[in-house]
Length: 287
Image (tube, rainbow, N blue to C red):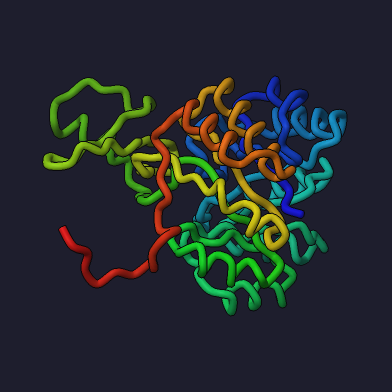
């Protein structure tokens, strides 16, 4: 049965959070927009997770530069002492170091790279779990998930662009504006109504889908194939995050799906299905 994971927005969420596991993002090596957590804060979260019987997953999904390796290795060794259950990673420097230490709880989060079962099986042979791309159809997701070592993002804004450059800061500077690059902004194309969340951190600039990706009614098809379903709480308030996590938990338990989905839309109707109903590569769509 799929275990439900959720990114936390504060340690105060943990005690009452319906999720089976808590994802906490490292302040130095995570691409999660906000919040991120220092080592001491992660230590506190780990203690709270043990107290409340929840798994803890550390998000260290950044691409690592050569000059960052000493700090990375120092922090990875420190985290090993905290009893972290799983690590979400995006750079094989993390895998290489943890392999030497015998750590097995590794989930490769490549965002959009894992698109077929053979991909998943290669990593399975290496003892690695993987995050499936959510830019593929439901049919394709089911096939990849059958490999048996998979996580899938089932709710939240999906990252669609990343640059290591400080694009917001550069824009404000060159345009002569006084915007605060640390705030969250939205991009809107001239001829389209959608607004894309954009955020700049010390790791670069990130753009996300204008809607919240939601795989919900299909949970019954995936709950026995996936190891983990992730609720990404970026840009959500704590209150709505807790409500959404609760609805997904009830859905996994087999409660009335249509009623739960109506409640999900009542929290925020701006949800989308991405590529769930179509192939991921389209030569042409009718206007």
